[in-house]
Length: 296
Image (tube, rainbow, N blue to C red):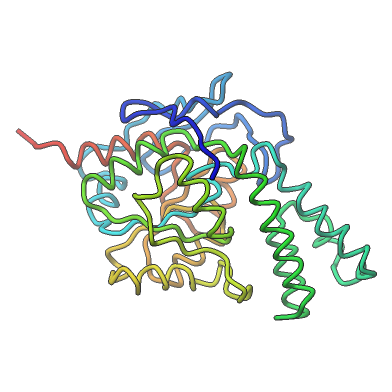
């Protein structure tokens, strides 16, 4: 288990491991300084250290965030994005490239299309191969290689600002948490244990299985969480940062809150149909706190 200093408390964001980076904008792996706006929320512009500087509260009575918080008995979290940046220092693009090069060494360069060979998302590569050779030894080997890379990345993953205090506060107030992700559940377990967050989620960690056709946008992991936790879809909220998260939530009948740390990711979420999007988790934390505050 990788032990990490917590570096945060209930009154501030995670800053210990959050630093700026220099990847290029325009992909899911960049950390742009573009401002993400939404239907009632603050923004996360990021200062020089990468600390969340969102200023909106989104916690007013009757606001979309307040309504989402009030109705969420179960919160389903995507992992890479809303909780941490898994590939912050261990580039997802390089992992995808490594998978493509491994296929080429097996004489399978022509198995992928050009778009698939140049993808920055290793899950996209994995899904493409599984689509052509479902359940094969080739897919098993490729998935194992991806899991090893995710384990390497977990050691340097950066917590999403305000995620840790939000998770702890929401849990303390009685909402139940689950992870619904395309990442390996073993990697999720490792990261949460290192941050002292495992007790907020365990045993509800629903990640990638050998049935790769059930990766999001298929709602399989969301349905597993709902069924195991005994929750109706209308009592649940999913927090995710990709169009596949949004699509999976819609198919599962679960309300969706998008997290977009830059304008590029926000556009992709909105194009996918997301109506509630935050550029920072700070206003969501404030909405959760406001919901627990007795009114005069």
